[in-house]
Length: 486
Ligand code: NAI
Image (cartoon, rainbow, N blue to C red; front, top):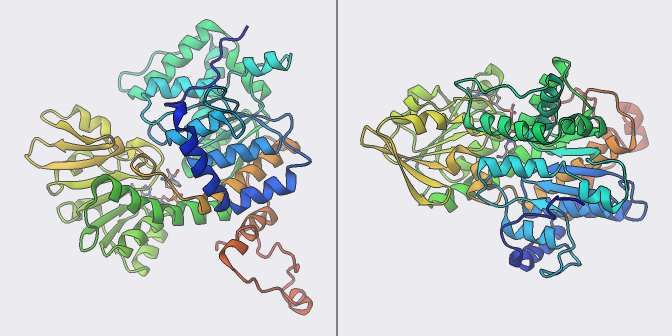
């Protein structure tokens, strides 16, 4: 018999509170609800076994229940140790028809404030389908689809298989991060228990749909090196994802996180934003909207010029260290804020990251800094007293603070992202895609936008037949060539 746990969440008693929030979110997620309407009867995801790794929020709960409404079976973990909303996780575990005493929902393994060991344990759990296999008397033991955000689930399968083929898990290099050591330990234990586990999992996967810039970057790297094991759909680069979630989502959830964490007045302050991509644009606009004077840094001359034309000062961090009150990173790069930078900041400067991983700020370096002490103001808000006598306030220990200190992006924008996710799952599960990283076809991107117009009272103009012939663009789209940049 199976040893797989049915689920692990903080507190099932939060399920009712979570269910209320889900119900309200459904009304704000018209794209997902339209897909339930369109595909609920034919259930095109019947037979799909989706291993999901994505922030376990209220919006994700609506995504999960949409996948289930389309016929899929799902197991879920969060893709960040601080991003789970415990009420949403409880509601998903209990399910719409279950009760706290008789939960009948989805196997979800997520709670706010996981340790890294717990995080990688939870990620492993989404690949253990022995309970489902036993119930179905099936010969498979794993999922056949991955839905990923940041690429950790995909990484576990690729690395697990690589080490199994090599017959052993290597020792960590002396300068390896704590997290990499945890991953190696997780895979070492798994190799000892079941030497072909990840090879079998990898063989069973039809494809992965990836949510974010950083995860997509990892997929293209795997493709380039010839290591990619299954086809992937890059959901991030749907226009209705990155040009909306990354930008307008951050515009909402960054100030939300700053306010909940510190409640410091943003107006009149100097805010520094590293990176002027989609996330940086939303961050800078939000801070300017609150009355801050915003300074942007960029490595790419095109983005730097954009920031300048949008009216922002563009400077290197070293030039404005003592000037800024709030520092925000959103580059997807590492070591953007170094320990030396931290030491040069004003007393009680706020340091926050909204890029996917925690190494945008050199947190490992800060933890190793002699004479620095950490005072917890409240969970996910820490005052670091520096040896120079000043303090900096670090939010969410350097991890995604819009999810750690607040509740992430709001439902309406996530409905756009997740409608793309569901369409990508439908594509990959229903069609044989060649190995490689793909984006959704333009007509589906336009469909996602179309599904969100009515709720906002948008009146769309229609091409006349003569206009359509003049432009050479079909009345029903697609309206733009693939190289158009919006
Ligand atoms: P992007 O590629 O559009 O923008 C990143 C920008 O940072 C680029 O323009 C790049 O030139 C610049 N950059 C790189 N290194 C830099 C450095 N050392 N200093 C200054 N600028 C630098 O990527 P996008 O979509 O804006 O995503 C950024 C990060 O945010 C990724 O890790 C992504 O996964 C994450 N993300 C986070 C979300 C959240 O809810 N917190 C939502 C969406 C994305």
